[in-house]
Amino acid sequence: MTLAPNLYPQFKILLVDDEIPFLRSTLLSFERHGFTNLLTCSNPENVPSLMAENDIGLILLDLTMPNVSGKELLIWLNEEYPDVCVIIFSGINQLDTAVECVKLGAFDYFVKTSDPSEILEGLKRAIRTQELSIENQALRRKVLSNDLATPDAFVDFITADANMWSIFQYLESIATTRHPVLIIGESGVGKELVAQAVHNLSNRNGPLITVNVAGLDDNIFADTLFGHNKGAFTGADKDRLGLIEKASEGTLFLDEIGDLSASSQVKLLRLLQEGEYYPLGSDKSKRSQARIIVATHQSLEKLQLEGKFRKDLYYRLKIHMVTIPPLRHRISDLPILIEHFVQQACAEMGKEAIEYDKTLHTQLSHYHFPGNTRELKSLLFDAVGRSKTRILDKTAFQHLFLNDGLLNDQEPMVIFPNNTKLPTLSSLAEQLVNEAMKRSNNNQSAASQMLGISQPALSKRLKNMNK
Image 1 (tube, rainbow, N blue to C red):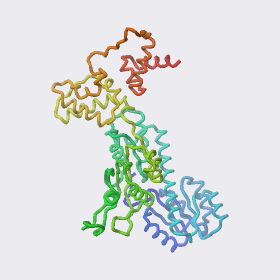
Image 2: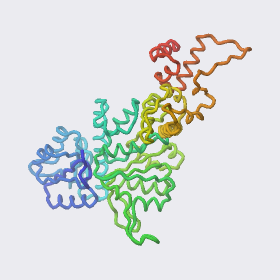
Image 3: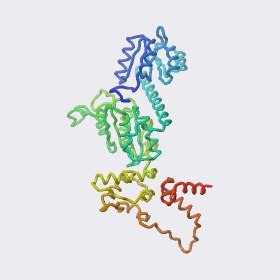
């Protein structure tokens, strides 16, 4: 679904009231506060046809109208469109009436003479609730289908890991929403690729704008994101657009969000809550039309427990959260990653295809890979660059296994001191199996290759060991 420019929310809001002047004034008020996907109806008898013809997710319904009352419509909507959110907007200020409407399925009840800010906050609450409901329905459909609707969006990910596949399904289900996305993962796991995939899947009309916020003080952060007006501070000789405006109708990706200062966290929280911001030197707010994606290698939960990250901002960001597993937890991906990076390196360096030991992934499988996929790519590019023949030079990996002997042509020799009792073949086999499972992070396919046996044979042995 392509989002039309400046439409908020993603579904239509229908205002139903027989008083046309009130409809007009309410419409103008909502538009001034950034709500633009609006429909009005002064004849309640037209509501069924409007519901059938439009993607309506929220209705503001007057209670007292001729011909068809708001109560009758509320009952009908709850039966025919139970997923649509209904707010009663009435001139009747009676508690028992409000309670009855809520029992009949209304999300909220407001008196027309209520404080306008209170009404706007109620409207925002209803929109957030409805958006989450739509997302949850999409997620359930995605989980049940177990398929990717747009596999091309993930073409840059070299993986066959089941956990990554589940993450892709989740990203598909949330991509078109306006809620922020929090990406957590170690350095080198591909957080930028995830942000790009979410942006591509969102079908938003604007660009993806990326900024690393680590080390930005509060003033630079505000100026970078919100921009400034001429004369806002010394040296501000002309207006400057912030990245939020440059990312309008697109996506703003804030990397290393865990390093954001406390004062900048307040500004980001207000942007997410209100959808509005003030350029430096301006007293006129602007509405953000950018979707926010943030990423960090740190644990925001731990940071907020330590008082270094705002709890309210953390909970706002984690509405949609994905944790990208490190490479050491995706050992089964090593063979295809090695093949991909070796081919890529040869192509970029103008070399003919290079052959390599097909057990290389087994030899690398017990390494921790603190730099994850990025580190593996660097190692393989270095190895291809060092190769003077059509055989991959393993010198680039030598420092990883200085004491392991895994890169030698022969298997390392096990030495038993003379003054110790020899282990039985059975206990030694169990030790080997346990060590292989440890080195492969319990990946039976990788462990079986280390041991030189088939995966079914290893599985059978593990079952016997656990009896």
